[in-house]
Image (cartoon, rainbow, N blue to C red):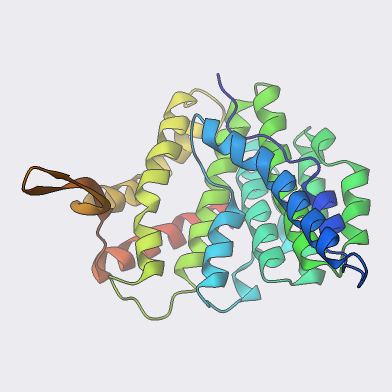
Length: 299
């Protein structure tokens, strides 16, 4: 099977190198080098995402969006790092590994440096308990600590931890753990997003972004069904029935795309689609996501 994602091994380092200020003598050359480094850092990630068999986005994509949308950061939405040691079953570990990787991306996106480091240690410890410690190297921890005052680098390293986990589990045919980790990360990402939106307007970009998660959920559900014989996956499928019902209720509206062509005297528009979500559906999704997230993170 094709890999879902590719780890971006040099992303943090390249961003660190790109953060240096240019000297007055070589300002133009330095700027050019920074642009080249940023492009090189992004290239492997973008290339692999284009090849993704199940295009499940990483948490930092959602958090970058809500940060840009001006939604306020709330540390209280993060799962308490202190309770990580209380998750003992394999399913709980995998689901909460996903939860904490999402929390790590959230804290890094909003530049909460202290919490980012704390969550990184939690993810590393849970990885060891799940027998995937190899994907969290001491070199990455040193890089994390060395870049504590460089938010861009910190966010890149947080992203690395997610992609390395996905790649390791996929490469070692641990698809059950990967399915649950992906579910936990997606649930936490949506939980934080839904609980960060105070005013719900059906036509707002943030609500539209939530509605678009119907497509992501479909991909994730397909992957869960593909691995339903693995430990804990069938139970998870049963637990997300309410979430699935809400997304099933969202209707797609055909819309004219921005591209058009003229055929004779007629203007022909390309067709796209928009997923509609009203306030009641938003509330129902929030309720079902919050309920399942509470079950995942409970002791």
